Amino acid sequence: DVKVTQSSRYLVKRTGEKVFLECVQDMDHENMFWYRQDPGLGLRLIYFSYDVKMKEKGDIPEGYSVSREKKERFSLILESASTNQTSMYLCASGSPYEQYFGPGTRLTVT
Amino acid sequence: SQKIEQNSEALNIQEGKTATLTCNYTNYSPAYLQWYRQDPGRGPVFLLLIRENEKEKRKERLKVTFDTTLKQSLFHITASQPADSATYLCAGDTAGNNRKLIWGLGTSLAVNP
Image 1 (cartoon, rainbow over the protein chains, first blue to last red):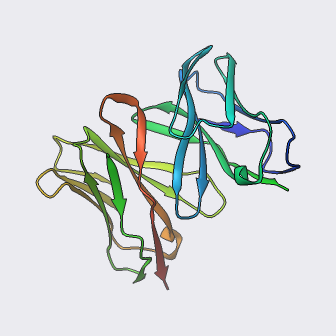
Image 2 (tube, each protein chain N blue to C red):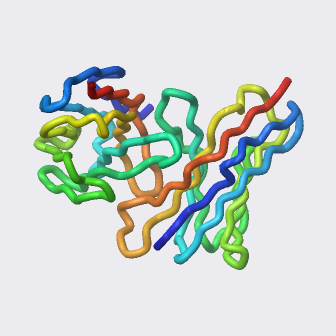
């Protein structure tokens, strides 16, 4: 079974802090994705990566950056957390034809 | 802009009946559509993919159709069970960038015993 793990299920950070969310997949997938999910707005793509050190902006990249130094690991970085970044963050890996999601990180920025 | 739209109203049905969920696409023609199941507080789980040249696809109690004339996909769960209660998401590929998906907001299904 494909496994996608995320570093934390719940996280509480203060405004202005730098936040790292990590995602690891064990299926040797080239593509990895970071989404955020908010009520009424659905899943929105922040960034994705199609190879090591390769990345592409999604629909809402502002305030975020990513890092992919190894194929299995894709990190999302909030450079200076703000309250409007309070959300559920979901990592996925796979192909465009089938994505496997992690359990999600519920981030609260106070 | 390219859109995937799902019925925002929750669907409540009786156990044993067939649940039918709708996914409409506008302003583009996806090459394929996908359906995912999402339980509260969890990540979506892939269920089925149907391509534009396929009329229908089945997997156990699930059936998906793709109607390019109506610009619509229907997702059916036959002999529904309370365990089928979840939110179901529809997603389509993005014209011009086949690595990205466009997601609907999902339809909540409640199957009552």
